Amino acid sequence: MRSVFSTVFRSTLTATAALLGACVSSVVVDARFPAPLIEPLPVRMGILYDDELRNFVHVEALPQQSAWTIDLGDANLALLSPLFERMFVETRTVDAVPVAPQLRDTIDGVIRPRLEKFEFDVPIGERDEFVEVWMQYQLTLYNPDGSVVTEWPVSGYGKAELTGRREDSVRRATIIAMREVGAAISTKFAEQPDVSYWLRERQDEAALSADLGS
Amino acid sequence: MKLRCPPTSAADTPRHDGRARSAAVLGMLIAPLLASCGVTSRMEPYKQTDAVINDGEQVVILARRHHANHEAEQEFINCISDSLSKGKSGIAVHPSSEFEDKMYPWFEPSMAPLSTDDLSKLLEKPGVLEQVRETGVRFLIWLDGSTDRVASGGGITCAAGVGGAGCMGLAWWEDDARYDATVWDIKELSSAGTIHADVKGRSVMPAIVIPLPFIARPQAHACRGLTEQIRQFLTTPEGYGAGPEQG
Image (tube, rainbow over all chains, first blue to last red; front, side, top):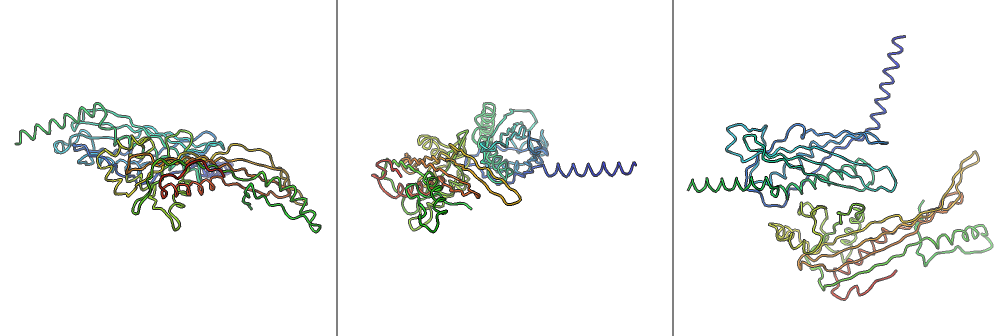
């Protein structure tokens, strides 16, 4: 009796898993993002990509729809890496903040980007035509000694026509939202009051060093 | 099976002779339906300069994407871009996604210039004008609008039994393709003009045993019409587009 119960239980579990598997929509956001057409800021920046950002997967079950998994890990790096390389005269990846003492003279600051929020909507009505994605990154700017200069939330919105596979539309809307985030970071980072003040300080220090050197 | 909707002015009626009375009856039933199915288009071009595209210059077609509730469909942008570059009098069209990548982030939805004044300010930013020159793009065409279903009605009932299956009824729907093409001359930093296209198409689907869809395609019609207007706009000096064209 026990073995019959066990067999039935296992079969039910297998069937449920199979059904759930069939109801999961998976999206891997793989895209190439262009480097921005901007003048680089005159600072040497360390970039800290933590594992959470590198392996970011959003999992959500939409009401009346299937469960979704959206893999953004590779896309995060594909977006941010060329972006930061163009934004600053010099960049290097760092493993932690505060940075190792031997590196402190080689960089002016460290940026740690994190993907804080990801929201999306896939319409089910006939008259709704667009998939929408909204996402928010948090950029933290540190001094090399680990003190926080500022935290800046930056968001992006994207929408894509609901044509063909829903997964493709979600992927396109996500890419548009990520491009918007990249646009905001590349054009508005230096305008943030704390960042602007910090940049002036770095420039003054550089000018003072140059004077002392000469 | 899909049948193309005939022009409203050319609704064909089957010949009524003694040999095909049933066909005539069917024809009499369908003819009014065909007459109600068709496409009406209205093009209003307005050109305010005498600028024309020269050899070596290109045009790029971009969708206005800052609206919350609509934007020109990518397939419509592709249709116009492809049609404009084809044929003997084809115009060099720069791929829109390539242009947006080269100019990133300045033509993203939240950053794109909304006026020629904004464009002037954008071109003053370091490296932007040089990059535009490198693409070879002289004219920038903003497409705004969409194709929407504005009305629909009727109904079809189908049934199946041991002896067979069949449908009976009538369904109809009306789509409206409304687009504005705004042409900017990057060389002169001015708006060269606009072309407004409004194409309405009514489709009908009578079902007498089998459904017979007579489909009107206003978006395809708008693509053809707008492409021809843009071609004339870019190749004909001032004087073109004196008034609205009704079709």
